[in-house]
Length: 349
Image (cartoon, rainbow, N blue to C red; front, side):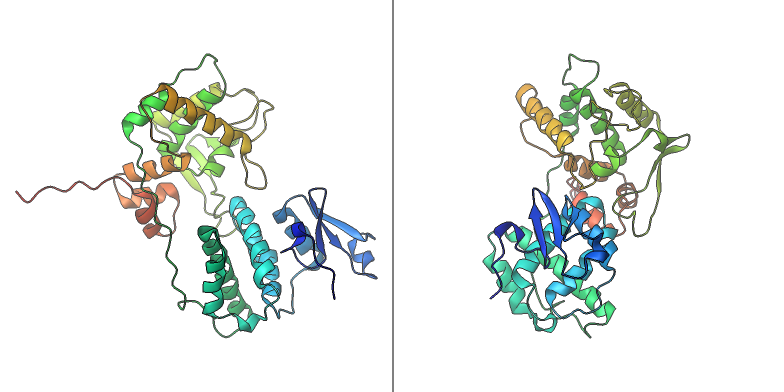
């Protein structure tokens, strides 16, 4: 019998293992020449990085017989085209899917297996998102010619997570922007400048934190949303207004390193947003800022920076304008999730 895998390696592709916080591939005997003559080939420190390195070496998987084979090809060809944060989330989902379903023949998955997978998981929301990844992988399996039809599409009905309804009121924004700072630069002023720009543009966290000084052009702020960078490649230009110029100038003034290429940078002049989709330093600043807001102002109900994106969409005069600001392909997403302002209705008399 094969040796049981260590806990940290379960769910990883065959012959993968983690060593000192990085992912390695144990090269089969005789194939060392394909892997720089090494028996243990270092793939990368993060899962997305490891999958990319593996894809570069192996190319496209041609023989797909199991669920594990399918999601391996999905990880190699589909996931790298997604937004950085989505790649990280998909990598975690794929690892969990492979650990449970990887050995199953591709054609054997039935709706009951999907229901059972979710039923056995305590983290229901995460399980549903993992099934969404599996479902898309099976859609690609049909496209790639492995199957004639999707085995559980439209056959499984899962209760979706209710959209968040928190609407940030104008007076709450005023309270946040009134919070004082003893320094001319630093976290409080940076967060306040960030809030101003986000409320005017609705930019996603990653897109806003990755803005560079060269993106600020004469006709406006030029942005290629990370969500569609590897698909449509659509570019947006947020045209200048007096208020947007003022918010950007504030962001420039409060940077700890004035010559940094990033509009928002840390004390070393580096971007807060990492290649793996994380922004730990920025998230810590945001939490500390919100703690102060609840302690020192009249704002007592917590809200997230993502709620500011929803406020931007909610305050837009029309649904079409909100959709354009948020760069959504589907207006239904804008309307269902981001338009949170209560609708005012005049009485009949």
